[in-house]
Length: 339
Image (cartoon, rainbow, N blue to C red; front, side, top):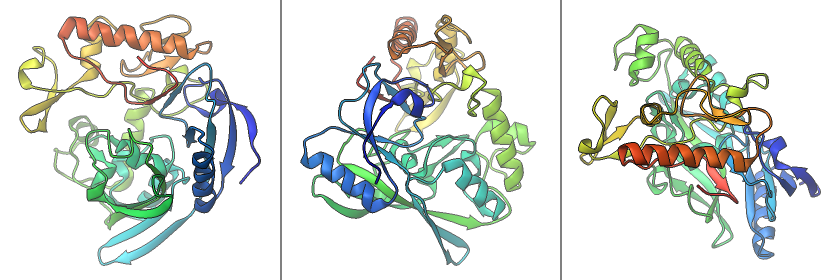
């Protein structure tokens, strides 16, 4: 583990926002667990820093212990027609997806192009284009901070839901490694997302070659400013800032897209709600704005503060609430700030 450094968190987040903090870097799972235990014993708050793609951090920074996750490692085990992958939390997510596609392993292809590290995926139950990590996750090795011990949690123990899990809003667990089960196949899992199916020229429920699916997903994400590019301010974001609200069918405005969410509820399109509440692509100012490619992304135009971003997020949230009586919920973790 490195010696503590005084850093600016804006240099470690995709939003390029966040004030000062004191950071150590953990290169192994043991170092990560020990760093968290040490901070807990000292009564210090902990900020776990991975790829920084799902964080909005206050301009004042973080006064506790920032621990950067830099662990690495991948082990594979054949299990019939499937392969078990044990992955360190610090592995780069999209590099992993690319490897699995190249190796003819099906299950992650629709999650291509997503920034961040492997350890963050179960926290958010990361999902895109009809797939989510819960579809392929077998188990998660975590540090249980309440007991100070390392335990393994099966998928059923993770409380997965739409963009959430038991890890997202609790400080109890720190993800150390993830076990995934993928299928040996040159073809993707069934395509569930209509836009992706159209792009691929297949019907929903059909399969397509892994490489074609990955290329199509990356292309769609890039067209929406969701593939990181330091020269494109539309990608200076935390991805989709608001989750799609899950509401009773009667709450959905006429003409708004909605999809079955189970239990008699539907998932409404946050992007549609934002747009039809009067916030079009590019809405904002020269510091912060909605992406010029996608209304769901709030972006740093180069001179923003976190306070600027939060003010815009509040304006959008309140505008949708006032127009449609539907409250939008932020998807990224807000550190030291709130809407």
